[in-house]
Image (cartoon, rainbow, N blue to C red; front, side, top):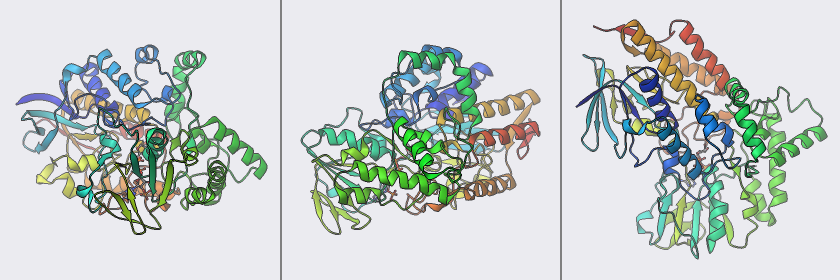
Length: 534
Ligand code: NA7
């Protein structure tokens, strides 16, 4: 058994920065346990065709290191999966992290020992560790949601989930392909698959708004600008609602005349990306304001898609715009103008089963060679409850969260002392550009641990009352927006049958959340309880 100060689970953006912070800033001993055979987390697994980040590359990176900012160069406005993976490998080398990352090592069990205030951790490959701190860096969208559709084992063709894509890739040439799912992932993969498949059938349950990315190679001028203005860019990312590189305009969609508003939407549509959503402050809070954006996008879909019945199906969206995470696409709607692409409405005629030959809906059987499940993730809690973690009084996380997650600030869970959850439920991360949200969490945790070391404290935990009070804040923040209005959203856990429906992310905005976390520290870690070493 190896004795360490900290065990970190996962080597994506979070785990790598947490390792660097504890090891190199605080001089602690720490190890990252990583189930994959390489670093990168989400970007190690999600290798499906068209996989790309919908945050702009100059903001989808660490900002804690000036050297990394200066040395790394992105090639496109939105980074593709292979480039992000190269970036994370570059960081692992640059910060000399590899010696403390155990690859191909899946944690199988973690148990809190109340006598010593330490975690006892076991891995599937038989390693054992004893550590004061257990820090989960498992990502929010990393546990694949595989729908249980009758007959899958009878299917004679091949099938894949986008989040567990084979590293050798998949050849769609000459194949009849079916894609289930039209979330961000499906919307990215569909145009790329359509370009090589003989025929692509898209099975759509809920139509989706999507914004054009307008991806393009970055110009030398922009690359220079981003490096020279790194401090300004970081300031924007850390003082706005969503962690992106722009502010939300402080203007109501309803206070501008219609022609002016349409021109503004048109301009943002042409510019591409999430800035469309940032045009008016009330798009996510007023149904009326939201409808102005929603209607604009529905009209765009009908203009782009040439076959009226297909356009109608794609634009038949009844939830508010951006109340489900809006995808950003490259030629998604245009793809339906191809002769080799068809759209099936499984809201009207649901999938009955999978047969040996393909997918059978209540109306028709579609013969297929390959089925792609772009069906998303058991978001925010899935990867955490899968970990076999036992806290105080022998209580497991799965038991504790049976009715939905409870955390304090998304950072700690009542009854799980000395355990921190980077981007845990109750934090705003999934509503934001991730890297700045991750940096804030890692830095907060690092400060808390330093505080404990400075004061000779052995154990930090949160009482139930802190978890209850924070969940009330999470609910209130969500209810001030249109987000909980969507019944089938993964923010609520509604995409996974049987999952308790609790609004999971904190919707009060990243900068406000940062302020709360800072106030908590200034107020002597309000809501946390510390115990001195025995
Ligand atoms: P999402 O956004 O959860 O989308 C999943 C899609 O799959 C969505 O269209 C679902 O329809 C559909 N789905 C899920 N289960 C089924 C079943 N059983 N039958 C038919 N269709 C189904 O996941 P993504 O991977 O696209 O994106 C997740 C996040 O990853 C994204 O926001 C980015 O942050 C990165 P539904 O809408 O539930 O009717």
